Amino acid sequence: MALTVAVVDDDAKQTEYLAGLVKEWADARGEAADICRYSGAEEFLFDYEERRCDLLLLDIEMEGQNGMELAKKLRARGDNIPIVFITGFADYMSAGFDVEALHYLLKPLDTGKFARVLDRYADRRAVTRDEIVVDTENGSIHIRVSDIMYAEAFGRNSVLYMRGGQKTDCRAGIGQLGAELPQPDFVSCHRSYIVNLRYVRSVKKTEITLDGGDTVPVSRRLYGEVCRAFARYYTSKNGGVE
Image (cartoon, rainbow, N blue to C red; front, side, top):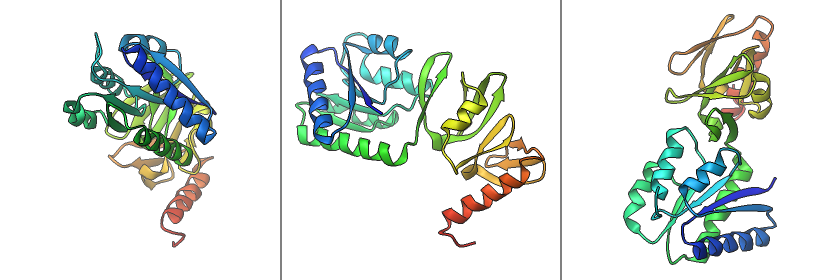
């Protein structure tokens, strides 16, 4: 699958320069890359409602809404898209940690360091794939799979219950979510529920208790399968020793 990279900078020459570096890096690695160019935060957000993006290369000092404000807006809506800040100002580095930026690069850009940052991102993405993209009423957002505690069906839609108490309403049925969430971490315990086994504290005949105290029902039909999945999961996490 092609990697979609968004470059957001109000300096057109800088945008083209960064896009060119991404293309050179992708060609050298044999990666398929779709590079999207934006002249500001507002233009990016308008397109982002409809267009999926895997990685955001973001200038901070821009006219109108600056890059840090854009990053905070994305995080506030629950979007964990990886962000690399590229800027001429070091003053924002601590703020970059606040929005969990993947990296922070200063202009003039060290092209070797830039390529290494992209290498690390691509390698991690290939190994972990610890994210999915879900559709919400505010558009598509990135969700860390490892932060999902459980999912609950609501008609044709679903709610994701996240670590830390956040909830995300998504426009996907529980069956569609189940197909996207990785095995063996996730298991269906009821026709309306999927749980992440890493957060399961105990399994009883009628309910599962999760870290934090939430409980979800277990159907009689799926109880045995859930118990076996729970045992396999923790056996594998402990090196195969029961």
